[in-house]
Length: 334
Image: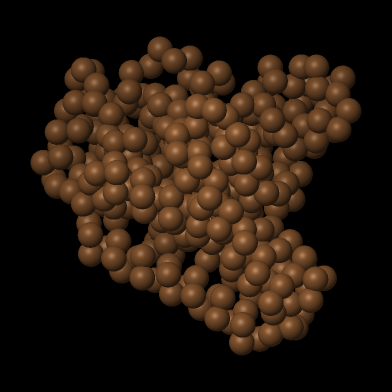
C-alpha cells in the first residue's frame, strides 16, 4: 500500500512536488512519541482496571479501554501502510503484534481488505467497504431486501450509530472467517496471536471482575471501540461519488474522498485520517506530513479542475447519513 505510481501526467506532476518537498520521508521521532503515548494509554487503562477491582465503576474503565484500543488500531493502520517502517517484513511483524495481540483482529485479513479499498475506493463491485452487508451504500443494493435486512435498510440512517456498537465484534468474526480460508498467509501465526489476545483478555477480566461485571465490561469496551472506529472512518468516503473504474488515479482517489477540517484535536482523535484525500493519494506518507501536503494537493487539484471536498466533522456525518437515507428510499416506497 505504498504510493501508487501512474503514467498519467496529472498525478506524476503532483507526486514530483510532494517528493521534492520531502513529505514522503519517514518520521521516526513522531512515531516514537506517538507509540509511547498510545502504549501509555493502553497500560494506564489496564492499570486502572486492576486498581479499581471488582466494582461497577469498571464500566468507565471499559469505555477508556475502548478509546485506547481505537488508538492502537489507528497506529496499526499506519504500520500497515508502511508509514512507520520502510520494509514490508518489519511492518508485518510489528503490525501483527499490534493488531492481532493488541487489538484482537487479523492483520493479514485487514491488509487484504484495505488494499482493495485503496485500489478502488467507493467502487460498487471492487471496494469491500461498500459491499452490501448489514448496511447498503448503493440504491441498486436495496432491490430484493426483505425481512430484517429490509427493515434495517429502510431505517439505516437512524440505525447507523447504534449498529456501530457491533463493529468490533464484526471485525473479529470477519478475521476468524478469513483465517479459516486455506489461501490466507501465515494462518497459524495469525490465529495463534489472536488466541493469545483472547486468553489474556478473558483472564484479565475474570481475575478481577465477577462474571456479570466482566460481561458488562466486555459489552461497553467493544461498543465504544466500534463506535469510535466507525465514526473515524465514516466521514472519509460515505456519501461521496461512486466511480465507474474508468477514472485516472488522481481523480479516482480525490473525487471519492472527503477531508474533515479541524485542529490538532481532530488530527489526534482521527489518527490523521481527516486528511483522507492526501492519504489516498499518498498512502505511505507519514501521518504528520498529511497536514503539510494538504495546501499543495488542494492547490494542484483546483488548478487541474478536480473537485476537492472538505467539511466539518459534524457536516461529514450529516452527508453520510443523508446518503444512507436516500439509498434506502426504494424500500420505504415499496
